[in-house]
Length: 154
Image 1: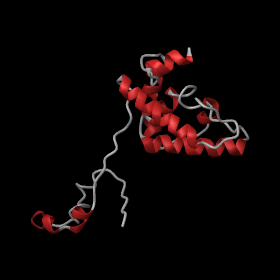
Image 2: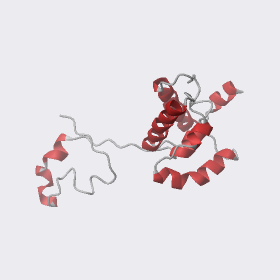
Image 3: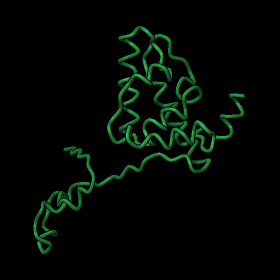
Image 4: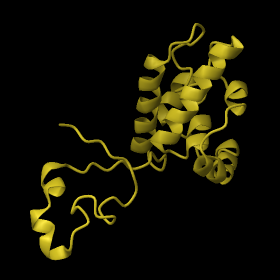
């Protein structure tokens, strides 16, 4: 059986101890039958972080089915933009890309562009946090592009 639970602070809420008292935690079945996997947000602080972000965008590009999509659509053309819009969180990134693809199909654009994605609303947490990050990326104080990708694009 596979059990998928997504949330914040699940252990603290008693999920793995079934909410029992501390002396009964050793008897909890859920904690003995599940493996907790954490997922940290993507960052762009180091070259390795930027390469990891690029690999995620390249993987997403391969799964986007739009008539006018092209290699590099996300990883080269838009790299900083989806990072700012998602603040590096996978759920927010997937929401942005999914909603963007829906809008691209409905509008006949059939490609993900900044103009199109500007018309897509993302989750509240990302929208609230994006301003400062977007400004730093636009002023080139930060970049999500690894050095090797920047050289290739030049």
